[in-house]
Amino acid sequence: MNFQYKCMLVFIASLNVSCASPPPDNQDNVCEIFRQYDDWYEDAVDMEKEWGVPISLVMAFVKQESSFIHDAMPPQKYVMGFIPWGRITSAYGYSQALDGSWSDYQKASGKGGSRSDFGDATQFMGWYINETHRTLGLAKGDAYSHYLAYHEGRTGFRRGSYHRKPKLKQIAKKVQGQEQRYRHQLRSCKKELDSNRSWWPF
Image (cartoon, rainbow, N blue to C red; front, side, top):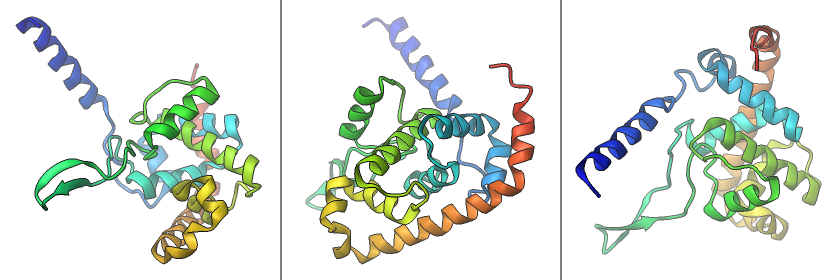
């Protein structure tokens, strides 16, 4: 690999990093999130139309899973307490989708994309939640149960593995509360957000 080619790769990588959106300034208010990133609202609306999953639910999941950090990863594992030895899981990006789950999504939906892209990540979440609704019968507005199924997997949820994890159930309640707040907030600003979309030519 010659020097010029190496420089080109470094330049392209730096462009990709610079294009990534930093986390929203106010993660507790979904209206403020979408005002800051109006293209995220476009993505969220597309997800809701595609999968019938409430925007408030997916946004609450993203906040909990990655805090809106595009390249979020789980903590490192260490051998002997100080030698880095990979990650705890393969979770990555806004949705913290595992490698296997992301692959299943791509095969089932025919979609490509990247876990570090907000629109692609929300499409994955919409697909996963819709599949959970279809296979387990969970109402799409049931943030508590859907988060448990998202975290434990559908098989783990069926087996009730979460019953042995009180901390996880506390987090699921937190997600449920966040979803409710986002839902109420969206009601107050949806007309404004939709109005801003009206000029969008695509």
